[in-house]
Image 1 (tube, each protein chain N blue to C red):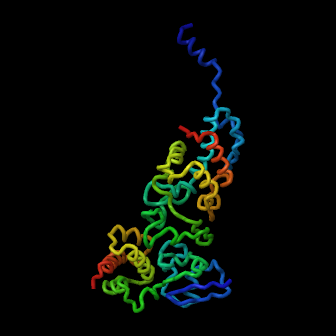
Image 2 (image 1 turned 180 degrees about the horizontal axis):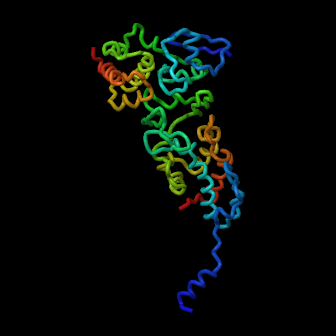
Length: 203
Length: 153
């Protein structure tokens, strides 16, 4: 047997290193989030932290969230991220322009008959916080960077995710809009577990 | 539920009213201020635009509860004698065609000029983008806003 064949045989027969992947975790039904406890199965702290962020990213990359974390002048609508209709402009303060401000139409609650979504403080996230078309790893890096997270500490990020009433809209979007997975409380627990495990980012 | 609102400087007490009733319904049906028009009912066309404490809002989707204790201005109250610079420019340039959208157009433009007395073409386009005109009077609308901004007689 040639040396190359021996090497190949050795590679194939060697036990695979333990990979702390999500596949080792219990399956989560669609529309739900895994509990932080489920991630205790991942012994390596950094790997556990990265996996936790992967679960958090199910929410952060959801259309109800990324549609208002856009890189340009316009929010998006729907699950296909189409440009806002009627056309609107971000404006200097991310709340629209004179005569066409976000809250000129959006109330502090959903309007079921007119199908206009609403929540307290309706506005776009600043351009520095763009999430649309970003990977979980990119979003994670942004969230940890005070220059791109509004100068927030990790604790403030957790509080924003867990309690902000505008974030809460993601789970009560009204009309026929699909809600973000899980609950805001579940997201808050995952965010806390992610921080407690070192706030590591996926690659 | 009783709600008090001020419309064009006048106090109104609305007795036994559903707080979710659209402000447009109150203005037109209860107060008889029919200058503000119903267009789409979904905040998509701008025909129903009025001011709430100076901010342009779509009255067809604004619950009257939001106007409680606040100042509402409609096209009837924009000026005492129809002499707001925008109204004068509108007449001078013959902006309206069918006219249905024009109250909303003027109220949005008034909110723009109040915040930005010298808007550029882009500023006007952004602020007016949500006010539809099925007659296509957009060119004259923009010209009238620029005329009003300059105070051109």
